[in-house]
Amino acid sequence: MMKHAFLLLFVCLAVAACSKNDPDPQSYLVLEGWIENGAHPYVLLSESIPLVADRDVQPSDLVGFVAKWAKVTVSDGSHEVVLTGHVDQNYFPPYVFTTDEITGEVGKTYDIRVEYKDYVVTGSTTIPEPVPIDSLRILTRQDSTCTLGCYFTDPPAKGNYYKVFTKTSGKDRRWQPSSLACISDEVFEGTGELPLFCAQRMMDYLNFPNLYYGDDVWVKLCTMDEFGYRFWNNFEMSLSSSLGIIWFNNKTESNLQGALGYWTGYGVDTPKRIYLK
Image 1 (cartoon, helix red, strand yellow):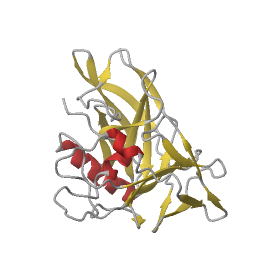
Image 2: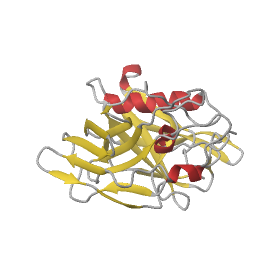
Image 3: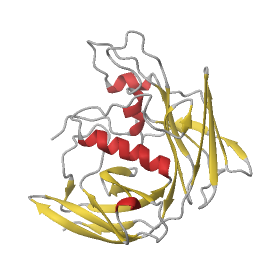
Image 4: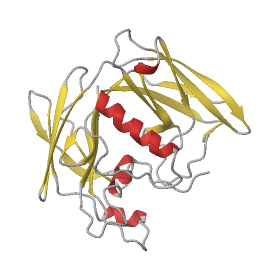
């Protein structure tokens, strides 16, 4: 069983840019943003937290570093919209930027620009073609928990990248990233399989697995571009080798200029549901 982990990428990156051994840590703007086909853009923003050698980061520290007064602009090539920031208790810290004036479409490119204090951040992403889930199956059973297999058919053309999110009825108010469920079709052909061990819930014990009998689970398979995959793959590798906070630094690969984090377009087909029994 792992310690409490700050597993929402927004929080992971907020503490990532600085080192306790750095006498003069540089502050960075941290952006976590995405847009799906049929959905609106979502963006979370903060400044990185300077770390002190004899002081641990507490969840309450994060709230003061939220960039609430940022100007966040998203363009779809036809029109440009300034996103509105508001409180949203589904996230932590509970503040997001979004708009209902832009809805994601497959094949479209979306540019983002953020202006905050002396920061200017730009980035671009495209929503790839979705790939449907063929089936969900229980792979292993252990006491009261189990692991799932998510199966799908990879298109013939190479260059497809996948990430799975889950949502358990009665437990989750938002989609949670499924731990270690990230893959590129460079390593397989035809039928793809992603094992689902657990959901990475904010400030929850990360025990493998955490899918329980009696859970009513929704599974969402997302396609994304190469930059999105590289970011998630980096995160997953860090997660698998860490027992605490997932640390990133300013060398972490990103498609953003002027900030840490990511801006990713997701192609999403209809999510599938499975009742674990």
